[in-house]
Image 1 (spheres, helix red, strand yellow):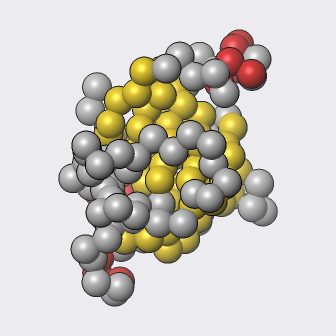
Image 2 (cartoon, rainbow, N blue to C red):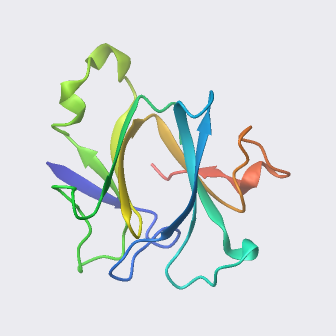
Image 3 (cartoon, rainbow, N blue to C red):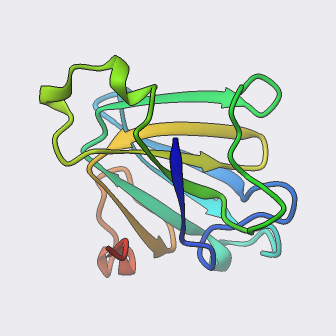
Length: 144
């Protein structure tokens, strides 16, 4: 299994990952759309809220740090998002539905989400349930 760290400046840990403020769902809480969070050094106020927008989620799993068997966070990096290449978990699903998808691990303070999706966008501010904010949350795609 090969991993790549992502967005170390925007989403990082100090021994514990960012604080998960809110999980965004659509279709009555069935489809995962994104996360709102605070980095460890952020004061707990509205001005510091950041978000991750998940594009075309195909599968996800949420566990606590105590239960997860493969937390990728290390002391060698402040990264709290990892792209997992050649993922054994992803191989469990039908490949015809996963073209252009990747397996990502998001390590929050108390929760770990493993997500298979097409793309992640990062931005500042709240991520509204209809997935639009005043300036589309300043969201930008991940670098290639």
